[in-house]
Image 1 (cartoon, each protein chain N blue to C red):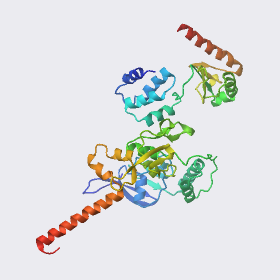
Image 2: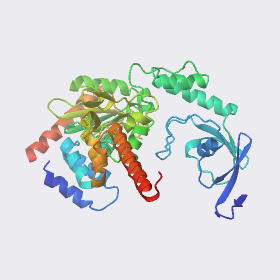
Image 3: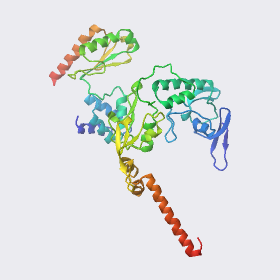
Image 4: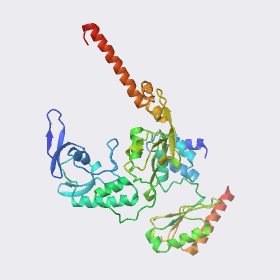
Length: 160
Length: 276
């Protein structure tokens, strides 16, 4: 991300008290993560100490300090999902993608994460992939889901 | 509410009772402050008079009886606004403090300060799973608050959340803004943060940060981090000279000045009156 683009985001919230989180959210939206140079720029522009910016950036799950993949997969491990077999779904995800929860594939295609309840317990086990909810997941449904995500990614690439 | 109006000051005082002793305090005095007025000892780890209360360690827990109802609360941050009764040593308080102490022991079993305080409260062991080797940090946040609110540098902060929470410099790298004033080490209740002056440098290994010590302008011995002297003399040219020399040389200089002054005063007295 260019610093001018980031400056645009910062200017959008100019003068607002507590603009930090809004700026970081927009930055995360554009870059998919929060790069260190960008955080430094935010600190300077908003006159918020870098330590505080880093504190906020590391606190919220919505922010990532490491680059995230193009597709973001969240496996719910909340109580309801857990008892209905979510750990097996996660295991299968980890096996097929070849990464552990919290990591990103080398080709930067997928980031796999686990969460403790997404608030859709009736659908459990739930997987949230790129914002879309897949309910009643099983290990067998993992492969088709990854394929759909992969194709939608290829389509996007063909479009652009 | 009974308020006592002191005629000279016209400050409303509130009468409270701590462990049966009555004391009149100003509105918004904290229970901890009031107890210390009465020389009643309440243990506290995250409290420091230099910064605002934070209620992180909860070791200062007391029982407050207000309008006939009793509650446990952190005394360091409880502002007194009405007549209350405080118990600092009731069974409930002691039990709560001991459990808290066990949790702290589980967090830093190696800290001497924590072990000593636990011993004082009658706790020798913890039933909770102890954290393996690690720092003696109890996450009280005193260093963060002092660095931000008193020193005004904000070199450190809490990072991450929940059980991963730690105090760190941004990006866990040596600090770029730390002035090595070691205020953090000074207030740290468990000694987790240590500062050492080695071969012309002040090392703060907890922050992986070191700063070069500046030489005294008078005797030439390194005495304070240059960054700290600079921070203290920002926009204060009048302080630059006196802070550029070490405390010992400053004392010697002040002593010399006093001596010169008294000698000249004496000689003036002799000239004027014929006697010293």
